[in-house]
Length: 338
Image 1: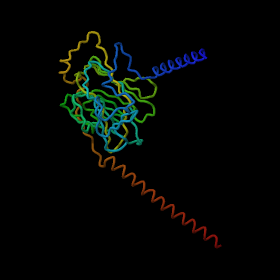
Image 2: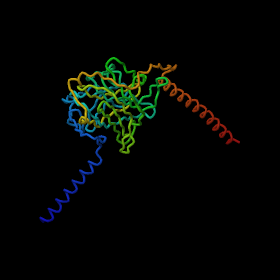
Image 3: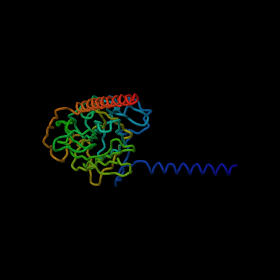
Image 4: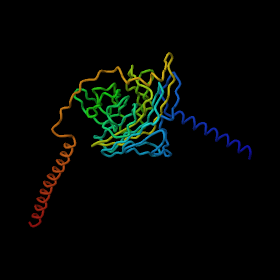
């Protein structure tokens, strides 16, 4: 009996070790780095969220945000919604990486919106605003995951689209025209409506901002962009926000992990000086704003028109069909009398 117990106990240990190894193998990890990384849980959102309340000491929620066991839903798939979640603790790390798992989905097949944003700004914005659910005139970094195609003249691009904007509080983001006249960098990315997991990595190391995505379900990172000479202070706050308008989508955050990265060789860090830095970036200069040529009718009016036109067409076809059907029945009845 003792031999049987020891054998089964050993088997159980082997099974546990194999399961742990398998979990580690399939666990999403940050991109490979030469320096050590340390997860900062006070700046992270890690499921399950069932124990998290709406007044958790490290994160504040507002708007339409709903917390469930496996996700934080910033907006449901309904019109005119906006939600936000903000880290209450200021980030003091000089170098960092954010690993985020998210899902943007909804009932719309061709029309949907608007998108969500990842923020690193000087103040938390719990009130609703016109930039993906947060206020305009921000001070810091924003990464926009834009799903709705607003065309800005010759600067239009395909959607979904990921872009970075660095503002110092004096500029305005033109959400109605995609903000392309003052974006730092961006790329098209098919992150919306995927059935598999979708991920993004945002790295800020030694004044270099790099964004990668894994949205194809192949467990492989694809570089979106890399921009050097990006200046960001320490002491700002992380946040997430999303919004819907006439169009809608569910914007879900599955996981957000922030990793602190060791200083690179030769890199110095003075906290007092880093707190006084003004956000800036040496990307493309602000392009002149190009106003859209406004159509005679809005997209919503056109949609209503097409629906009404289709109903009228169906009524006409139904009337014509009914007329010929009656004519056929009358003709067949006449033949019976001969």
